Amino acid sequence: MSTFESNSEPSPPNHLGDEEQENDIQDSGEDDSGEDEEDIIPSRFSLAVDRRDFDVEGLVRRLESEDVFIPDFQRAYVWKPKQASRFIESLLLGLPVPGIFLARERDTKKLLVIDGQQRLRSLLYFYKGKFPNSRQSFALKGVHTEFERETYKSLKDPYRRQLDDSLVSATIVEPLSQGEDSSIYYIFERLNTGGTILKPQEIRACIYHGELNNLLGQLNQNPAWRDIFGLPDKNGKDRELILRFLAFYFEGNDYKPSLKEFLNQYMRQNRHLARQSEKQIINAFIPTIEVIHKPTFRTPNWHIGRWRG
Image (cartoon, rainbow, N blue to C red):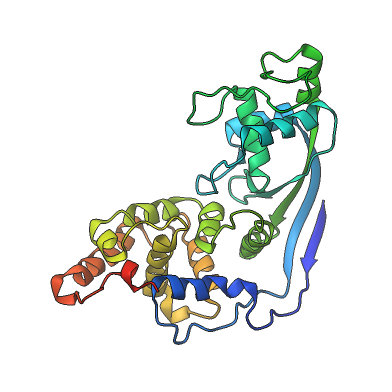
């Protein structure tokens, strides 16, 4: 295990990390006054970095027990059967495959998947014999004729053992102190740059999953809030606006730029409702939304969904 310290220079103006503030303003119609601040990234992180190899059979077992954990809010399984089959084939042929990136949670010691969830889900589904929410069995297709139409159970014993014993390399990071948990956010942000990029609130929901994140989901279903915001946002912008309200309502006097880190910090510190209880949060949010929802507050094109340009 080694210790990693990032000593990057302060971010220049218009850093990519500003996407959260800029896009949220454009998408939700918020006034951008005072919101053009630079995304301030800490100049140093202290992380323990461990590199190890997992055998596939053990990795699947850890996925089943959720010792290796893929948060529900991560992007859906998008690989086509042929993509998943080619990945399994690579292992059967003894070819090297890309490694995965995990973060060890300080409290539970579970391993959170930061990068590699499509590969891990493919392994899990192949061992289970079918794809999720489908009657379609997971039989290999578009692969070497020796493996075509084979399932895990139908593989010849030597090939099954080859797959079970195949190794997948993993990089495991763990913050060295409680205050360094924000580093996982920035790792997540940088690694998830291919395909459909996760938005800031989606990343928070992955990293800071827990009671507060669940409560945000419940509040997001409030009828008055839904009428104000409009249709649910697939990237979690509606949940992020609720998070903003709560963060400024309870901790606004301590606000320091950047907005992204302010929201990260609030969600991290109150992840398990240790700072404000569920009752306190509900009593702050629901009455406020109901007042805003009253007809006296309504004007043409009044709800947030219609403010978007």
